[in-house]
Length: 325
Image 1 (spheres, rainbow, N blue to C red):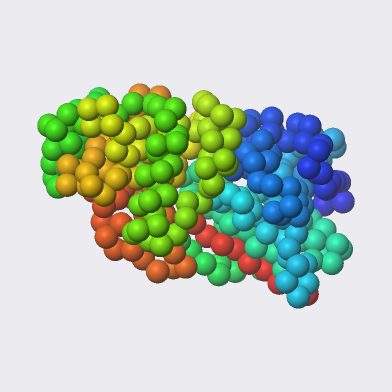
Image 2 (cartoon, rainbow, N blue to C red):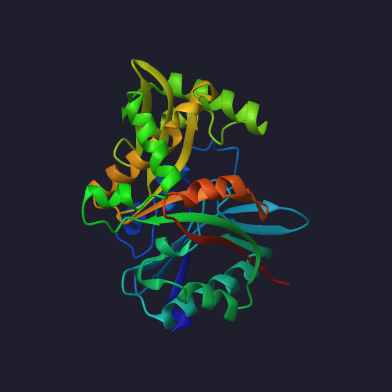
């Protein structure tokens, strides 16, 4: 069977069928779409995107780049929150195993020395669950890094259930924000939001946003139905907001959750997450990913506790690694 798997390098200007396959797959996300990855400047990464076919049918894709660090390294994908293989719906375990084996052989034949795969947490994996992880292990991959992610299962019967699912201190924060007249709505005020985002990240964490203003604006314009900016207002003043990625039909990721420090005492951060939970539930999304609470496997306890207040469960984003020589 392995001999019948054909692998193709897909160039930056020839993605015919790639995004359609991802959208109809069992575990694809917005981060696997070439339409999404295309927001990066061409010179930032050297693309090395692979497509696998059996009898002219696409059965898997993996977006990636080629990087030179004392030899060629395949990485999937540094320009996204996570990457890894996307497989067709109802694919069998044997086929997945053969694709991974063929992938390893193909990289060896093309003189790659190492491979790194940034895998999505389990809720994104659909019916495949931990099968893919198991097959990575059985094919010689090791986990070299794990980051802790907090995910809320939006399995509520009604709106009141959402509020009651919050921990008491979190619920009090939501009610306090509502009491002071804070309200949230989808907004196009990206300039105001980005100014707050940049200021808060610089003061609190001494870092810049993951996206430049131009990149975030481009993403919002490219994916108006998949990337949402919700603004938080006091009277008519924008005091913060949330950027939400609708990753696929079941999962959403909160990428930015930010409040002007001047208004933190009104507890709008709690209200923002509660509002998004409700919005996602109304739109039939099953899981809300609050993002990671660790960096380089060092946990931020305060951030983790904040996310736990929304009834989240813990999952990990795993980075798999294999030497090919």
